[in-house]
Length: 209
Image (cartoon, rainbow, N blue to C red; front, side):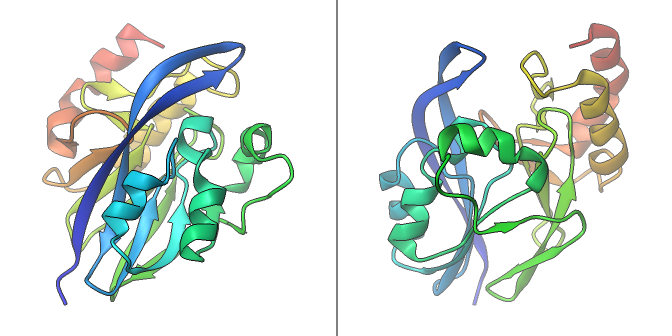
């Protein structure tokens, strides 16, 4: 069966360090007609369940632990009977949202997740948060970048647990080395490609955090 990507959009508040801003999040669902993998679980389960459409969910993968990527994870996991996965380095962020309900499993750099007969590789890309990850889908020519890489530059590093130098290294060493034609599906906003972003690395460094 053909593997495809569906996008759901949810809206809510990103809150950290005593401040909150309204955000619109992308949720990516990868799968075929029978099973799917969900990337991020922000704000509300309704739009995500609609995108899943009754398929068996093999996992809910959180790209990082900020509340606007995990706050619906537990409810969604219960609704579709699927494990929630998060890199262990972001557990402190997860615990601010779900203090009494840990993730079901961790994510490890280099591990391969399988759904509908296709494989997605976990890339640990710290910087936006210590446990940020991206998922690379070579067969589909796509990278699911969470909040590590956006159209126009790296994810924000002005909040607690983030670091600009670290995210630049992650992008330069782990992401911009992928084929230029690789499509980038981001945690917020519009898609881009590795080839469109790579020429601007030096400008991002000059610009700073």
